[in-house]
Length: 215
Image (tube, rainbow, N blue to C red; front, top):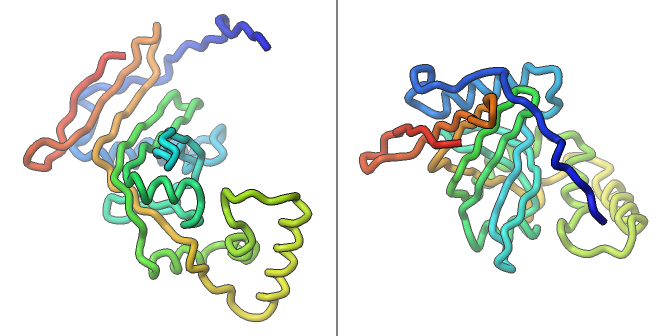
């Protein structure tokens, strides 16, 4: 298959990102941009983030997960601990997170160290999930091969019967990861592809410093 995409192009002109307007703490700017995205009618899931990790096969892999909470500067998401993504994270506990909001012509790239949340924290979030999502965590052996959709539905029926009365317990194999940022890169689209890029990183004293990157 061949496809010519050379004429697919867009002009970026909605905003600017200048040093004199950025706060000292990157989480403040993240919060400002996230609020804009969350309030934008053109953006359905502002908390959707592209999570990149290194797999056990040595290949990097990207997938979309949902940011569910920010606690003490850590960005939290939840998943099956036996999944392909979890196995890769456990072996290589560093990830990159990307938020891209085309309607705002903004994106944020975050490099982070990552570790599992406490069992208590995972349970606290699990209890907020709809009942169907709680059962779904028990049904899916995430990333493992299955013969058919029908087999998955059979497992769902089995779990619905198993948990038809009372609370659905938190599976031992399911929980959260906390991503602790080590750098933030804020990108604002600009005219003529001369985009604004501001990078936050830590100095030797552990304080945040900023620098402008060329587009």
